[in-house]
Amino acid sequence: MSGHSKWSTIKRKKEKTDSARAKIFTKVGREIAVAVKEGGTDPAVNFKLRDVIAKAKANNVPNDNIERIIKKAAGEDGGASYEDIIYEGYGPSGIAVLVETLTDNRNRTAGEMRHYFDKYGGNMGQSGCVSFMFTRQGVLAVEADGVDEERLMEDSLEAGASDFLSEDEVFVIHTEPNDFGSVRDTLDAKGYAFISAEIEYIPSTYAELTNGDDVRNMNKMLEMFEDNDDVQAVWTNWENQE
Image (cartoon, rainbow, N blue to C red; front, top):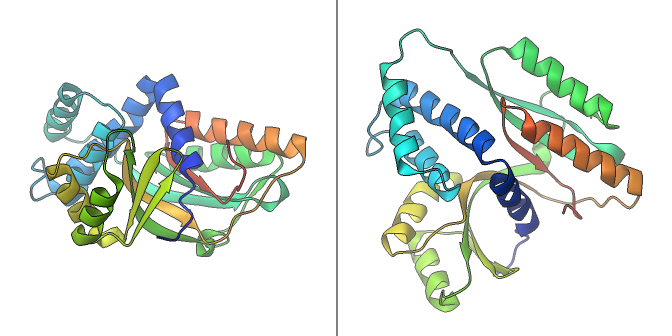
């Protein structure tokens, strides 16, 4: 089927997971805590919690850690209150950047995000300045080794997936955001293991960077965003991201 999955983006995030596992645990733990406070501890009725747990497992967060975070969040009273804020802007040469955050201090986070943009040749824009260039899609990645492609594609489409791609020894399944949970649960029940499973922002078009300084600055900017505990995810339309 057609489409542009940009597995390199998923792969980069996977590599960051492997090299900075403790920080990933912190970020996912914050998402779990927020989901519990909003909808309770039962993933059978709290669909947001179920999605975050699936994301945690795809990032190799141990079940014991997940259960500990849920119990802690359920027992907290008057703890930190987090809000979802998306910052938008441009990287070097106008690369579109979306930064998803969970923060308990929007002034602090806004200052840090603006600093990262400015420091590496970009600039933070107003809400809506680049988000129109992206669409939200559920994205599930399955390692191709040992998996029957035709069977997975058939199972994915029957479950309600909107697209199926084979790229870099990985099968990538796209869904509409509202179908993400049901498709993931159906494939999980059939025994498929995900190396990435979350709702992402997919750009409608991609842009390349050909200047070496721009490439270095873009990589440094992404590293700064990803190392910040308030940042949950970063999405760009950078074509040659590595």
